[in-house]
Image (cartoon, rainbow, N blue to C red):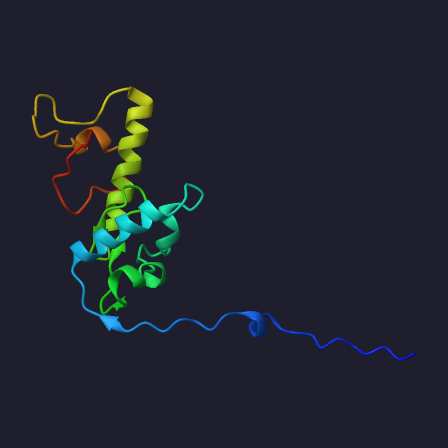
Length: 144
């Protein structure tokens, strides 16, 4: 009785071929709509952060069907607020500011807004102990 050795398959043999998408020109509003559709379709077990690379660039493989292809330019997303940007540095600043605001609220029980300001502008003087450096942009507004 002879036994044959089973042919071993590598992981690459069983993987599906990667889909090819055409390159398309999209607006930031197109990207925002695609992100919203992805969030609506996804189950609660799949966080929206799954489409954000470590450098805050959006991974468009999961959004390509909604956009009709892969964008010809990168877009970036905040991990804390899920806002979409065209500028690479903004999501990092927004994330650090949001974390500082959250920490301030946890410690003080109040929001770091300018008292009496109807637009709810963030008071960075109240956050100076929570930020290593002030953001390069101003103003920020607290949302409800």
